[in-house]
Structure formats: C-alpha cells, structure tokens
Image (cartoon, rainbow, N blue to C red; front, side, top):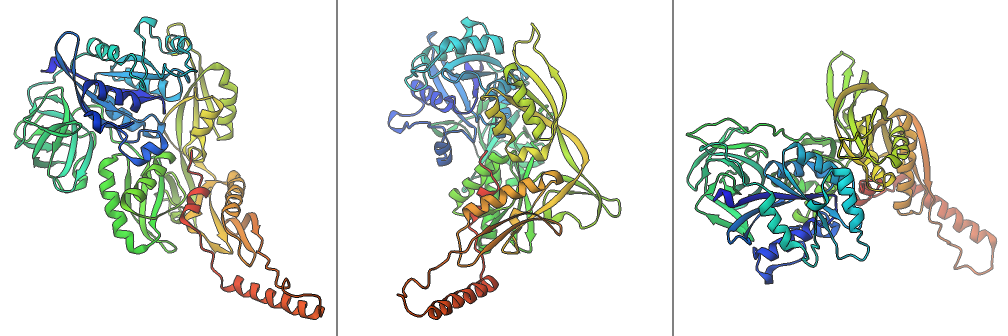
Length: 598
C-alpha cells in the first residue's frame, strides 16, 4: 500500500556515521538476520571498509511495525559523503521524499553537510536533522544543536539524538520517519520508473535499480528504456531485502530492481526512464547525465591483459555511471584506455577497485582536464592528454569553473588566500541576511578547472577546519599559457608522468615531482639524472647518487696501485651501466608521484 511506503536516504559529511546508523535500522527492523549482521553491512566493498567511506549507494527495503500498529515499508538508500561522489547523492535524492541529515556530535556541521542540505532542499525533500554518536565522551550536543539552528534554520524541537553504535534513540527516529516523511506521490497509472543505479549479473544480464513514479512493473512486461531506445522483457521484479527478493510486482512509489536480461552494458543509462512499450509516456525531467571532470590513462603493466582491462571497465561502468572510457594507444605504453572521472579521489577508488576485483595491475598516467586547441589551420580540437598537443598551434584554451564556497566568516581570509594561490578570481562575497538560514559567507570565485587536480579540495578542508563547502559548474573556456611538462629519468622520457600545466607553475610542479621520484626510486650503482623539461628547456633537475661499493674493503695495506686499479675498474663498470642499464619504475611509484591521495 503506497500510504505505508517511506522512501528516504541518509546524507551527511564523510565519516559522520551513515553506514553505522543504517546497520541499526537494519537490526531494529529485523531486515537482516542477527547471525548475518556485521559492522557497516551496506559497505560491502573491502575498499569501503578500509577507507571508512561509502562509495556506492545501496538501496534496501526495511519492514517496520510502527506504534500505530501498521507495518510500513522503509526504502533506505545509503549514500557517500565525499564531494567526488556528489553525483551518487543526487541520484539517491531523486528517488526519495525525505532525508535524514546526519551530524557527528563531536565534529558538528562540516563541509558536505551544508552542500547536501542545499541539494535536498532544492529537490523538495523533507529533512529530519539527526545528531549522531551521542555516546562519544567528546560529544557536544548543545553546540551541534545550536549549529543546526543557526546555520540550517531548524528548530530545536525538530532535532533528534541517536547513537548508531549503541542504538540509543533509533526507535524514536523510526517513528519520526513515519510521521514526518510523506508517502510517495503517484504520477499516473502508466509505468514510469527512474533508473538510479544498476549492476551486472553474469547469468541474467543488467539489473536496474528503479524508483517507480507511476504504474506498476510485472515479470513478463515488455519495457523500453527511453534514452537508450532499448526494448526488453522484465525477467524478474523485486526488492533488496537482505538480498535480492523476488516479488509479484513493483507498484508506484516503491523502490526495487528489474532484471532486464540485457547483455549490452551500454543499454542501461543511469537517469533513464523505464516505460511499458505498449503504453508510452514522457521521460522524467531534470535528470542530466554526469560529465567527467578529470581524465587519465589506464594501462596494464602486462599488455596481454589489455582485453581483460577493457572487459573489467565494461562491467565496472554498470556499477558506476559516472565513469567514462574510450580506447587509446601510446608509443611508450602500448594500448590502454582514456578514462573520465568526477575527481581525483574517484579516480583513485576506481583504480583500486579494478585492481582488487579483477586482479589487474594498472599503470596510471597523469590526470588532466579537457583543453581546446586552435591548430595552425584555425581548427578547434579537444584534447585531454599531453601526447595530443600539436607541435604548432595558434592558441590553447582551458576550462574555467564558477565556484561557490560556503564558509564561516572567520575562515574567509585563509580561503581567499588559498583561491589566489590556485589562480582564482574573486567575483562576489555574499553575506548572510537575517532571512538566510545558512549563516555562512558565500565566496564566488572563477577558477581554472586544471587547478582542482592539485589538491584544492583537501586544502580547502584544511584551511576551513572542515567547514568549507565547495560547489561548482563549468563556466566556459579561456585562452591560457599551457605547456607540456615532461619528466626524464636517466634521459629517457617517462610518458605516464607527462602533463599539461600552466607555464608559470611548470618549474614548481616539475621540482615537486622530481623530489618525490628521488625519494621513491631505488639507488643504482650509477648516478641517475632526473629532469623536468618544457620543450627543449630543462626547468628542474635532481640527481640520485650512485651506490658506492667499497671494492677495496677486502684489501689490507699493500700496494696503492692495486687499489687504484680496482677503483678504475669500478669506474668503467659504472660507465657501462649508465649506457646500457635500464631504470625500472614500479606502477605504484607513478601513483604516488601524481599525488592522488587528496
């Protein structure tokens, strides 16, 4: 019954206890048998457990018997908190009527709390403010409550207090979900469903996670995905209740899955609309596909694994709609794939998951953004790899963004200094008015997108003590002095480290990369030169000294000429090694030099 359905998500800053609270909801409702429960149940990926963050959104149905005697269906969607995965948050919001806005009792309101609150309010969701981790000794409930009132405009009697760890306050929270979050609205009698996630089943093909906006879906129904134009038949309809649980049908307002049987991974697009083939209706509005912001080359260290890497990317794409990729080749690296990501953390997560889940060893090239190049013929080309930069061109344009930074006034000076260092241009400062419930300054900046690759997000979080919330959109292209920076190791070009950078920062970036290489590379029995070059000009140089083997150690006293002969022999050996020796660089070294740990 639709009146007994509640669709909601949990949104918050990273590590504020979303997954732990979800565990308690699973436990309290009995959705998961006690012997199957484990910490952070929804974080099924090893990588999520190690990093302590939720990467993929999950949707699970919880049966809840409320105090009024009715049994409600809670459709819970657990979401990530990091800015790189804000697309996942937007997908979950589109499938919900309400959201639990979670705040850590010890840390208070932080960066993504405000950003996600904005997004939820814009989509018309009903918010329930929840202060979590009240069991911590350092919990400051009064301070957190005051922040929610002052910065987000809630009333104190609207705020709930829970401990996801101990379960305290969770019973009251579930009653408030029933009371405050409305039942889903129905958009007609014909099937109209939003695809908000998907995964690949080896035996049954693509499984689409959907929210039914109208109509119903039954096994055997012929359906069409409007964006892709794909037509298929529903093999199974159901909901995630501990695992995949088959149902007779999915009804309007419900969240569940459709087994499509489709084998072509490109035929299911996140954000697409599912309809009955025989009863066409219009596509659901306001759900634009994600656009990648950062690009990098993925190559296998073993070229025999090229096809395996492509197959892994195909399957991974179905679990991560924000990933894009296409084939590319390189003289130095062989065949690989040019991949697009939401940000550098997203890139790092995808790389690690591919290596773990598909037993691959991936060699990574330097991340880049899309540049527009006007070639010598006046033609416009789009490039995102250094090797594509033509030798002769009229000019190059780089993408700029219009960014909005929400931050408390006391951090304004440090944040403005940070933006200046990242080539930012201040456009406006918006001070909070009496009617503005978000009591923070809004700094409006124009910034080059390229600068986001060099740790902007992590440094913003640092200088604002975690209170800086950053959101941006592309704002066109502008002419810039962009050059190709190459790294030479022992006079050999190391192609994965080549990148396109702003000319005035080439020396600084090159120097930092060389120092990192010097720290990571082993020493050889000959000196190894490290150079950063722009064209024919060396802009930075470091040297790794040779390991000097004491060849005279076994001698005792005796003729000095004997020592001299051995030293000369060692010198000749070193010269030969410099000439014929090859420097092997581990794939992990590339990853660390490119500083992708923001």
